[in-house]
Length: 333
Ligand SMILES: NC(=O)C1=CN([C@@H]2O[C@H](COP(=O)(O)OP(=O)(O)OC[C@H]3O[C@@H](n4cnc5c(N)ncnc54)[C@H](O)[C@@H]3O)[C@@H](O)[C@H]2O)C=CC1
Ligand SMILES: O=C(CO)COP(=O)(O)O
Image 1 (cartoon, rainbow, N blue to C red):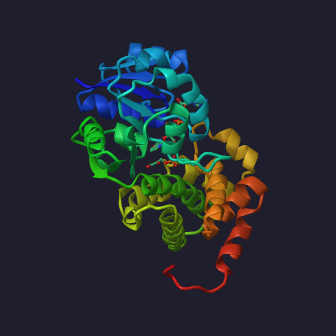
Image 2 (spheres, rainbow, N blue to C red):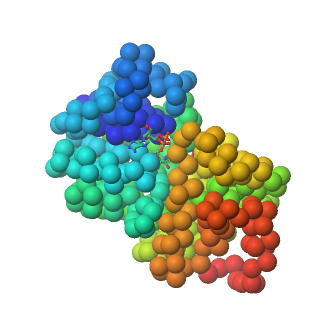
């Protein structure tokens, strides 16, 4: 049985721990709050995040990251993107020297513009060929209910990606292998911002044509940015690209879409922040993605307008006019 440490006992960390336990691994799940740890160990449930899922008893929770990491053969990380660097400062000396380190996170760091695999390499002291990114249309509550879904397991090393895919494969979760770490991460982070835009449109009463137009043009700007950063354009047509974009933009389960929806309905930014209990990565990453795009001179108009709403207090209604009145251009490029 492969010994796995999952760091982060929120929505996705808990659901991914359950995937790996169902795949036959023994899992130690690190959660910050003792209440969450006790509930998982005693009642086999994490009621604050996944109240309907009974967790396998091969998952043991702990509030000690040292205990979670001890002797781990695979380390999986699912904390908010903006806290990762601080977390790694605590974990760095305890990370096993030969285990793959898997990022489940979909964000870009503020200030540095770094992808999560870059932060793991830099702040965690992890060799790039041990780092793995898992991404795809993976809304945690659906996976926790064992509804079929697929994801891409991207890594530079064939041995490492095969090991993580093997340890994550179940009857309801099908990992595909990939090599494009950059594209997989840019796709995952940027779709959250596009989902904010789609949510705003929906909250303002707009329908499926608007959603499809935003989604398609959002994919175009995502692919443009990713390609400029060295990604394979094909990645954006895959599970981490169009797959995740469709799931997130269409689903009321998405925290990013819901955040945008509430803004579109007219709630103030502060009201929406106060009503959001889980991580909506796009709210912060819209700013870092915009800066990243500017650094490589790539136009990302949807990201730019979402950032203006979320960080400059622009009214979502004004965004519609701003996007619709842009200079005429060819669809491709
Ligand atoms: N929920 C989902 O369906 C999916 C989420 N993701 C990604 O997974 C990552 C984690 O998201 P979720 O688990 O959904 O978020 P969440 O909000 O449900 O859970 C975040 C966890 O991190 C902990 N946390 C908060 N601040 C922290 C800090 N300073 N240090 C350490 N831990 C801290 C929280 O206590 C919680 O356990 C995000 O990047 C998200 O985009 C990816 C795929 C699916
Ligand atoms: O990444 C996700 C689904 O693949 C989850 O999206 P949200 O973070 O918007 O809930």
